[in-house]
Length: 221
Length: 297
Image 1 (cartoon, rainbow over the protein chains, first blue to last red):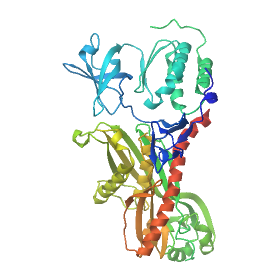
Image 2: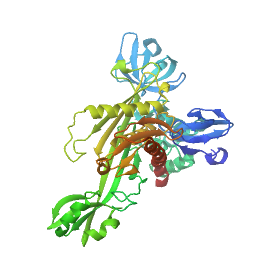
Image 3: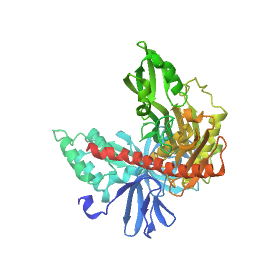
């Protein structure tokens, strides 16, 4: 995994209203045009790459998008299906035929967003219930950093901790087996330092330094 | 009174000291605290100077705090002290103080609109609740929201509604709770300044920050950022305003008192310049939150 500083152009911290660039570029997410200048909408990392200006947000709520894999909690059982809390201002509905077996109030499910309606309420599909393990929360806009480029960060975490890790685009992460606590600490570290560069190297070092002495990857229950 | 300083030792166009901190509350999606006021020194003065100090207190922001060890306990703005030192005789500094506004703002949202009927299927609705703690002013303030609180909540809400990209979160509300813990004139601008930092901290898309400041007239001069003492002057005019610094658009402009057209032009011009100073502090506060993490490494 190459250092992120080498090939990526510089990213810098911006706050709403700050000019990202005065050049004519395409608009990516998180920016708008004011008086011919490209201006940031949110607190985040600004980037101008390949003629596209964008601000990668550091805070914010999850908004469901078709195709996202999310982790939800069942909050209501109805006749045609289930209401699911997806850690968002918007609600989601999971039809009974989109999930196998019995689902009950309080169950944690991983599902895909099939459709989002005009007021952003989501319809889910391909759901399966997650049993056991631990569920943690991070800020949804920092999820891409936990996954990493070509899933590099998440495979690093899985390899080093021996845990099964499922990352939902809505900021919920399910960890099962292996060194659960180490994986949790590493993920919270990534969340805290999402705006810094050279993160993969620091996480590798953090995992190597903190991995418990006896190599016991066998206790996966 | 000396002709080039104000009742608290500031210059006519000088803001009080402002410190802003972002992300202070764990439970809120975004939060900020603003301390906006003057730093003071607490002094012990010879009681024989009492009548002298009482006459000084008519034109300067000097607070008599009673007696301690048979001496007078007097609170004097730090910046004023060099100007009145000679009148106090021998004195002893026993501590520091702070006289000003403290606002804590929490932002929740965008979140599900409750009650459901306040939701708008085309945009997010901003709700603003301004409250003042009973202990924020010298006399106990009744905690129930009154005419004044309802008004301030309304004008602040409208100022913020203008800057958020509300159409990105249809059918949601953004709740802003502003709590004034200490008050010394200019609480609505303090609350609004804190609120826009808290909104940005919550990751809500905004056109720009909102920077607010009060400018007005007191003791015959156009002055920036009036204290309670100046606001109570015979000729006082208070013009709180909030500006979008990038476009110089006004999103809040109120006035209490009477001014000539020329004075109003000066007030607006000074306010705009001062609001931009506030904006710079707001940006710095937001960036500091992330700079800290890097330093800890």
